[in-house]
Length: 450
Image 1: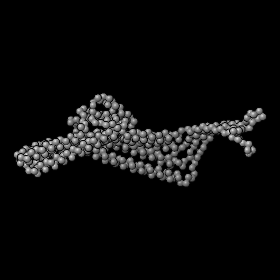
Image 2: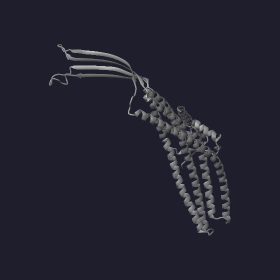
Image 3: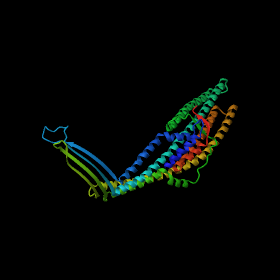
Image 4: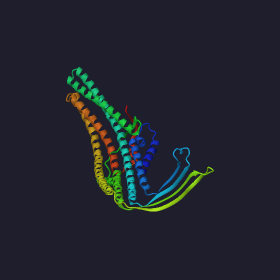
């Protein structure tokens, strides 16, 4: 999992250094997000914090050594003759002690559980890395989506304004009734309102992208019109099998089950004896009183060393050991059910993602055909309006249908891109190469908020 993170950073960095384009592309923004996204940085800090638990668990199996030193001065005598500045008794003591577990099954199983939990943390972080790719891609293509939406809204507003002005002129010369002017004005007012809303939505999309990278991106590259739309490769069952093997969240859940199983073993072994090797060395000296020449008289010096093997057997702990064992067993059942839930959710998600990609591919083809049909219908209705067989309402509705088809087509393309990435994310096979390949279909011409 660490290799995935390094590969993602390296691939992004290399591509960024090779891109002199004025507009920001997907890889450039992803590289910035890797360094600046608060969610990923928080996950990274939590990973490093959690990894310290492995060191803590290992420490209980390693030797424990302590050193001590103390010095004491005191004075004793008849009341009224003792002062704090005349301390005629002195003692010093220093020592070393160590402990080494020879047999401690609870700590051993806890250490094994910590190793499994460490693997779960790595897979959880890998899931966060893949989720970042999805969040960046979603935010990026939402900007492009809203740029297209605003573009069509402005075109629709301009067309509605021209139609409104044209209807006014026709009404002034008596060619149409005033009701057609009102209808044209209502459509223009609605189009103007939709443009305002689209401008706000685009600004919000830019803000969402900036929130991930920490930098504004007023210029972004657009998706090429030649971007290929194909159905998902392989079968649905093949993708399900891939997800059950590689999905990082599912792998993390499995490691969490293994970790909890080791903890349950540790709680069960808490009743077993523990054997500890203990040793120490100490040295103490003391001086007290003064001789006739004013020198200190040594009272004694003691030096000692010890080594022992301690066997500890818990006899009665107020049912605490039994309660901890049962608690660990229930926690193991909970982890197993959590893993089962994630497995079922992963299976459901991968099937939905597979169907979404294939549905998107079919929808895009139909949306493209809908644009052609809407253009043909609009041309026919406008021709009928000129000869009096159609009214203004028919023209306005046909024009709205055309612009709606254009927006639906753009939405379908961006939905396909995101769903294709999501399919790989759920399967656990989303890699930097997928972003690099997608980035090649972004054209250098910048799309802006203007």
